[in-house]
Image 1 (cartoon, one colour):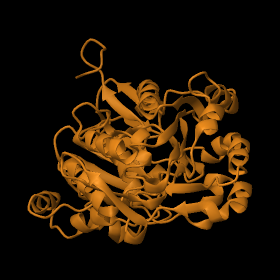
Image 2 (spheres, one colour):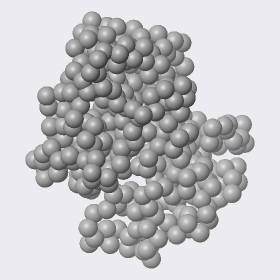
Image 3 (cartoon, rainbow, N blue to C red):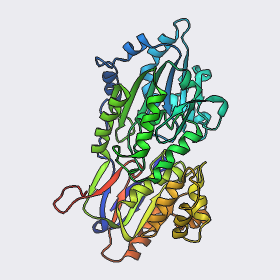
Image 4 (cartoon, helix red, strand yellow):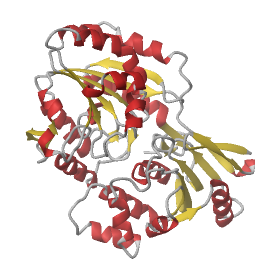
Length: 431
């Protein structure tokens, strides 16, 4: 049986005997017949009409978009909004800016800006496009503090804006419950200290995939959002993507309501019921979520839910940008003599961004092996107590041989955004 596994912007083939393939699972979504039509219809709905929003939108207006590590088809959305935005901009005194919500990621490269906005829009509005820098204190403003003690610092563009448009897409997230919604602004446009304090909550109970109620990270973000947008007119566009990362579902209007709608759709599309945990699992980080190992962690967390104790999790991710700008995951594991020691040290050290990744992977390494097919240096992979493999074909063959004749392999072709869930004894999802 031939399986074409996503790799970079293409695929790589893997041949496996049919009876040894437990399944090839991706998001439960088809290609949308008319992505632009879905979006246009949503933007024109009564009560959520984008033209009505612009008619009342006070200046300055800020449009907030995802960075290049997200699959959100921002350029396609902006192509639909552009004429109305430019008409609004022609009114004397109106000021418009675009903010790339990088969170603590690096600034967008020129090619990424072209991809995010579309080359023509990026060129015409170049002076209005800004990448957020979480560490640039001259561009940050303190606006309050949450009940959990998070000091809220935000980009001055958001603090000064009177009207805001947020464009985001929603998928499961390994400690915030789901991406999208409030994450455009917090942590998207937050200061480093704010992100640090919020993400520290990921070490607490409740910070899990698919969980919102009782999730301390999510609840802290919601409170930060309420403070951050107080007095502003906000228009939200929340998307759930189809199999080609185009608009499959769209909700527009109030941020809380649009996020709730998108979460319900995302839950149906991205949660994958499986019969059991398997001896070998291939967890794929599809482009652009394969950009570095920091982002690849999302695929590891998902794949861990499907691999049995003593099994092998094979991570397939090109990682063209290496380990990533945040190397806490690597540093914590590489500095320890074993995964157990890494966990022990994590309990004694002050929290660092990325510590939640290291601890979750260390826990997983104590019950299963992680093999990595990537462009990372072999010595870096081994330093994290993982096994580097040259190609996916040889990795699958070796893992099946190691696990024995009855072993099967499960392919999760979009592990960064899907969540495998073992069915209960009567076919219902296990609790």
